[in-house]
Image (cartoon, rainbow over all chains, first blue to last red; front, side, top):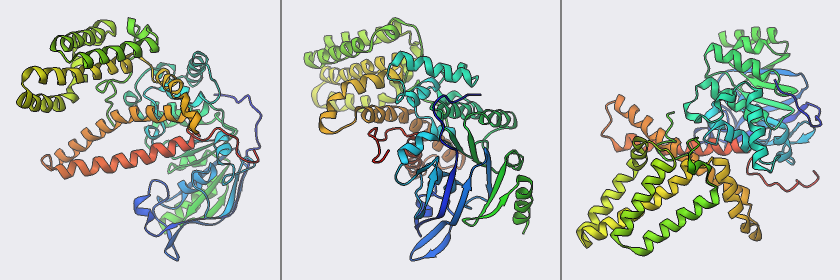
Length: 257
Length: 213
């Protein structure tokens, strides 16, 4: 769909003994940031994730698990939206704690609800906003924004209000907005959850070529099977890590138990 | 979520004379008109100001009359209260001047927002805010904050209508609490999500290199 032109960093993500803890009462007020269900870690703290040591190198990695299991927090650790309480996370060779701004330039993030992600009134303006740091001249920026939208086959959405778009159109736009800055890693938090089948297929196809590495969470097991590696997260730990068919079988058993 | 951008005067694409007019000229004319009616404090000036902004919106910006009416609609409660208070305390002519002048200023500002793309406005704000650099400020952040503010108005208006419908569906249309509390909670959640989305996109972050970068 789109190709990057700048030098690529190695798409490697390392988790080294990562734990994320929050105050015991944070889940109710901050459920948007951290997964709400967590394990009591003592000292008035709850553990969202614990004991996580991982090396993520495959081009497509799926993460599945129940609601509140820690999937979204795991994703947000990758681009420094959430920092580990202990341990460290390295994305594209950069420590997320000390190089957060540089990490976010290399790691794009797609939210479940695209309306949260789009901050300008129209699609073209939102892509232009992404490009502000790269292209200073307004006319060039406008031209480049339209080019990005054309590349994703959504040029017709350029001047439409984001509120007038369907869920699928908004999600495609959100992907284009993130892809405009050519991230080497793309992280997507349940990107197809709010979509019908047609739009889900379109979004899945679009996600395929955006970055060198795609890491996504999903409740759609056929989407999870369409990956090179699949993690099952349960109770803040990686309960299974391996081939997607085996991971899905494990997850089905876990849910049935 | 419903869209209320047009109702609240956000940019409407078009090719009218005002769409083609440079931003600086539109700002200058808006400021001059607003200053003139406020300085004159005369009913003739207010009436003339209202006529000018109405013509600018309908003929200059090709805004349909119905759309113009919808743009003014949210202001009516405040203007009505002001008219009633001023009419009671100072008489009908000062009341007309006060309420009319506010309407002129608001509509003059709406001419700008209706006919200027958000990015162009953002560029303009960033240009005007350049002096904040002298005190360590970032004009880009300043402009971005204003853009987010403008984008948030239609979201919150839509949220209010959605919550009101939800209250109606539960037979709670008369309950102020059933409307206000969810809107406030939704506004806080929206602010949180927007902040997170901006952070995820690296927007509004310090452009200076990180130590060791």
